[in-house]
View 1 (cartoon, rainbow over the protein chains, first blue to last red):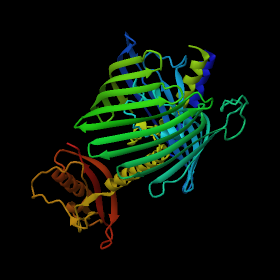
View 2 (cartoon, rainbow over the protein chains, first blue to last red):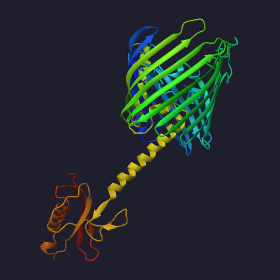
View 3 (cartoon, chains in turn brown, yellow):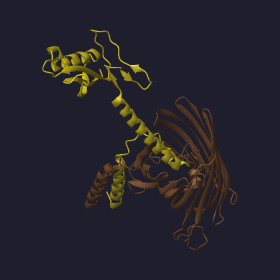
View 4 (cartoon, each protein chain N blue to C red):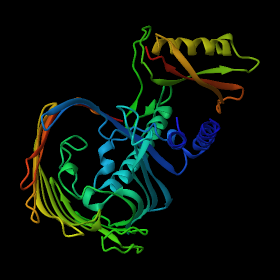
Length: 321
Length: 166
């Protein structure tokens, strides 16, 4: 209890300090979203109802001017579990947290953060954080600890990010030797963005025990937004060598957005396959609030074994602030 | 509540309060932009946008504070470059909601001044002018006196006032 009192006291004292900072060099904003859904999940003919929090979050982000053209940039984001308040045994869990220095040379940043490969996906996943999230089918959707990265300025639509991930004594490449170097894991991305077109090429080396190459495309034509991804990945132990593709489409009609996506990946080592199909619709209630419905079917097919099929349907609402 | 919960709650609360002074900004930053490939650009652009919005708001406030219509002399020079003065027929009442005006009346403190030149009459005339342009009421913003350089002992009494909202 004394520790709680101490935390509140520290918070209060920082609060007093903040009022003197607020008009000064610190520009910060609190942001977040609440995303809850009621979902019926049918796992191999056994169904259950759930209330899901879907990565609801609270964050602060901003920049602080150091000199003309030079800024400190920061972001700290935490997941909060709206459904039961239990985020892996804690009230909040860490999401993307980073700090960096931004200048005309680009940005050097570090923290615990989505890898450049995951960022390169650019939300072509239309059912992100729901049962149809592509992380349930594809590798490469990693939030990485101890990431040290450089992001270039955007020049003629091109931008690149390279990230180093020290192993800090873990065996990240699976060779039986603890890794202690600066570049034990690496992640890169190169993107091009112009008008309604976005293209990206990304790669991981020894990230989450995987080597991976990913290509992403997104294109917007009036009310229609299309996304596509092709990916190849293999694990360090040689037990997995996958390749697959993913496509998505969203069509906006007034306040309603119809959404569909499909992904397929096959393992060349053992012939196993994974498939994901999602259909849904969003209805915009206001600028920051939407209601949605969805249906998702995820299937894992293993050679010489029956398919493992999960299907879900749900309704939910998302409010951003 | 275990210690980990307390620690995280305290940390989050601290950060929230630390930034609460700046968090009232209404930026068009979408929450999902924080996870986008250009999240760094979004942070910089959004806060820059907020800077410019704040500057615009300050400029607007400053503009509003000096946009006062003179009811004497040549009138007021507006942003459009046109000298304007509200026109209202004599003896009528009108109301220019939220508009500010400056009226002035001469008065004299000379020993030989007539009663019609007294400050009492000047105030009476100023109130008639205020009622003429702000029939539903007004806020007095400022009052001051300037000497009449043409005649020693003569002055101009100025009232700056703003018509009420309704």
